[in-house]
Length: 439
Ligand SMILES: Cc1ncc(COP(=O)(O)O)c(C=O)c1O
Image (cartoon, rainbow, N blue to C red):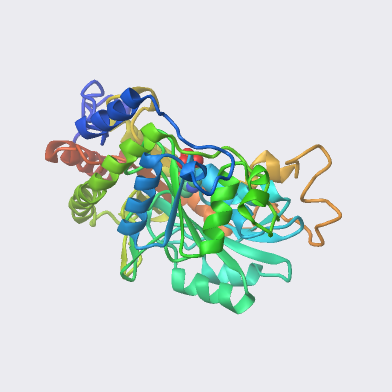
């Protein structure tokens, strides 16, 4: 048996033999960016209303990109923004969130998926996630509903849709809005419909790490005309625009500059054309890895939710120490020692992680209940009639995934050759088969 690299053996992959970079940006994006740069009009937004000039809605590239995105995803409105973070903040403003409202959120995601309600003085209430699919667990969501609940902020984690039928049924029963953080799932599906389009509002990210990207950016989608208008207003200096535009509902019409640039939009139009091909390549790689990693009890690829198209922003493995006989941390370090970093991301080391993120309520902002100002707003305020609870243990599944079960990797991205994939699979098998060395 081969000696593990962590114990001085030869690694499956020489650490200097870097895996390929993931770079979906090509000549098409370059030409598009140059075209806009040469025009000199890098943004055409104006934060004022003029009936005869569409500049409040952005320049020609922004507007063309939005209509192409809306067409592709079959939605009425697509509103581009400069990040999914701003998109989520705008979405929660658009639905009319108020100080003292509660929003049910997931603990297992990027932090803005849970902190966005705070920007309107609303209080995040954490529900637990599903042990196999890692999205909000409908039963836990139902149990978290109170008379203060205004909305559910769901996340399509790792490129897999949340259980939209179940979540939407809870929302309907209690008259709640649903905002989907679909940052990680461009073109994933739930029962034949695009994830991100199944809620009142969906938010996609175009940041550097996503399937398609423009460095930073996002697209916020909705079928609701009024919500679309409110999103556009929050994106672009609402308070200066509402009166001239004839908008009478001025709740949360405190605007920002969340605008997407013409250069980014021109590149995004090219990226959108590549999305399906990039996702297909990812899925082919996943199928290859999953087929060859089905025989390691205690270390297995997580199942995909039936009747969905998972687009694998990350590939999750579930680890069970009781079956392998080795603590996850030791197994994980041995895996890392067998592989190499990826080009352009050398400083990040091997693109593999254990635990994903800390449950969000473990962050100081929740543990100390200090967000805006020093007096505990909005957790402790005259508006909030509930009791905010963020103690350890409130979401046992998310905590278990973080502390014991979750292993993720990125080494299925387009550009990986068969040899690259074989090295990754080889490392998984080598460590698994030699795990007695680690016990
Ligand atoms: C689930 C999720 N939500 C929101 C975001 C925020 O996206 P952005 O970087 O575009 O603000 C991310 C970014 O990684 C994310 O993964």
